[in-house]
Amino acid sequence: MTTDKTSCENGSFRKRQSFTMASNAAIRDNKLSLKAKGLYTQITSYITMPDFTLTKDFLKNHCTEKERAFNSAWDELKQSGFLKMHFTPSGQGSHWQVEYELLDVATI
Image (cartoon, rainbow, N blue to C red):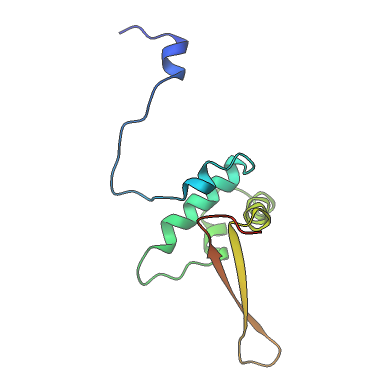
């Protein structure tokens, strides 16, 4: 079989099922880096798991990136409006509890 550069660049992907689905708005957002899109997709793959509580530390510990690179992607998702933070009183003095929400469409 002979292939040339043009035919390889214009190839298409085979269809797959039973895998994580992510928001097209996030994945196709030209303002998001591939690093942020990867983190978005990784978060999506975990937040649908029953009986599993996803935390930022868990994600950070399951990436090959160092803390600075991870935080850069995290901050990019927040600044772009795809990752929202909700603060509620924890009931323990002046402490707050944070809950993250991954959005399908950016809100700023």
